[in-house]
Length: 496
Image 1 (tube, rainbow, N blue to C red):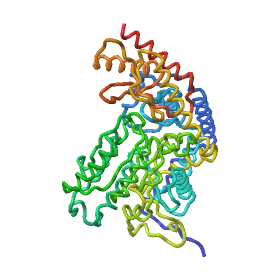
Image 2 (image 1 turned 180 degrees about the vertical axis):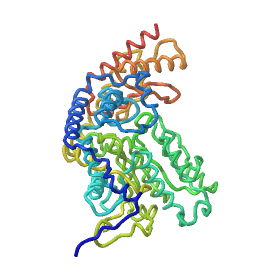
Image 3 (image 1 turned 90 degrees about the vertical axis):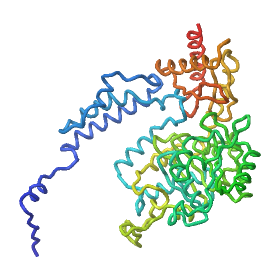
Image 4 (image 1 turned 30 degrees about the vertical axis):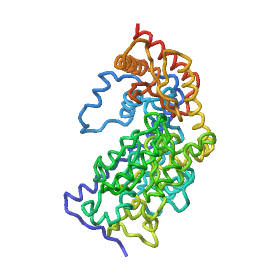
């Protein structure tokens, strides 16, 4: 029987017959450009040590990013030229071996290829039956195993640590509320919830309790000891006080690596208190959770395996290209009950694409990119053991830098490094704290502007200091000796 195509009205028929798409008119030319892009990318990474860590953008370059959106087309070769000259040439610098600002991983080329392949494959990780969803859950399972969680635990990949902590604390809030919080809302609580963390806790936790509707007052900051770890006795006292005052203690947040100094709370002691008091135990492990795979330093996070939830960041010590974080929850059902909904347009099936698990039921995002592939490929290429050795090396490099600081006055170590963050300063003789701050800020800025190294700064115990966070698989000892030499040179120039 002969098919008869539908006849559409004139204007609609004209639109349908145009044949426009976003595919190139010549796949061969695009393939040639793609090969050139890969060649440039290889050179960019292979020669990263030869470039400045960071450099300011000229006004002419900055102006290109203030232009209005284009109305008409530009040949893709010209588009790439703009990217090469104006984007690739002015990176933040965190892939460079002398980038130690804040706390970032330094990426890896295989992971970058994984991101490219993931984009080409184009899957949405809301769930369903397809390969990307299985890779996603395999990576979550690998991360679960790395930190010592049981096989029954669940998890979800997210953008980074802030979102991973928000996921964990959302489950904690709902699980500890004592009511159906999703249905009744916070107004139905008979007592306000209280969360506890050290006074060194990352600022994302304030954002989390505010986002959860609890308010900043719900997060009680507990004083720290001389090593900037949460004071266990002070925590016990705070929990008892809050019960007396009508609060409902709900969650202890342990930090495996504070952002200021890398301090690791006594996680085993916190797990014990949480069990005794009937509280949720969450670990912010975005800096240090993966110490668990480092042979020489795994002992530092003992007790993390007892947590109810853990946040960690594969884009830090697994050096995955940005962005990818992970939230892990011990109780699979409590995790799912916090986020799952079953709309009519997302019903599971026994067959077809919808026969797979709906991954969106474990987080806030229905649409999510295929971020797991870059982690999966790098782990398959190198193995977990190699990443563990690189973590141990970074910790050893921090100890080496601390020794250099001690042996080169007027440099001063502000606090003993626990893992891989070193806080120190140029302590010029006869200067008050405000003047020392000015000197060290200027040292930091000159290091950045000359492209020699990138440090950040912070204030610990009332003393402003430089902060070197060594989370970089390319860093060598001669990079650290160069840093100390340049800090001394610049410090002498400013002081003079």
